Image (cartoon, rainbow, N blue to C red; front, side, top):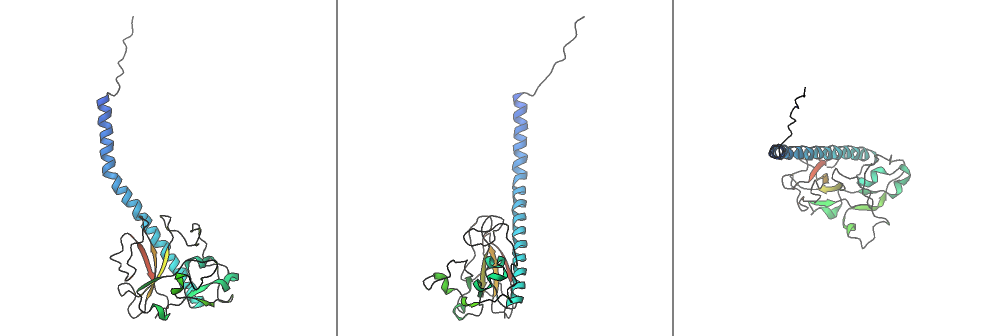
Length: 211
C-alpha cells in the first residue's frame, strides 16, 4: 500500500515581497523614533558630563580662588607651577561678551600668539599647597590639547560670557561649557551667547564665586 505524500508548501515570491514591504514600513515608522531616542540619550550624557566638570571646577575654585583650563584638571600637585589661571575680571574682556579659555600650549604662549588676548595670566602660577590635583582623569581626550571629549568625539570647550541671557542676576559674567553636538559644528553666537539660538550645541553654565 502506497503512502500518500504530504504536500510541503513554501512561501511564494509575492508572499516574501509582502513580508519585506511590511518590515520596511514598520522600520520607517520606528527608526526615526529610535534615532531620536539615541540622540537624546547622548545629549543627556553630555549635560551630565558637563555638570560634573562644572562641579569639579567648583572644587578647584574653592581651593585656589580661580578657574583653570579643562585639560589642567588632570594635572597632579607637582605640576602646579605650570598651571595658569583664568582671570574673569581682566580689563581686556570688559567689552567682550564671550571669550574662550584657550587650549593647552606647549611651549607656553608667546607674545605673538593670538590667544594672548585671552586673560590667562602666565605670571600667576599656582603653588603646590593650593593645587590638590589631579581633580579628574579623562578616559577619552583630544590628543593635542588634552581636553575631554563629548559623546560625539569632539572636545568640550570652556568659555567666559557676559551675556545677560545666561549669567546670574548681579554677576559680572558666567562660565559656560559647550559641546558642539551631533553635527560637530560650534554654532553658538560668540558675540552674545543666546541659549535659544545655538543650533544643536549643548551647554552648561556655572558661576562659582564670580561677582
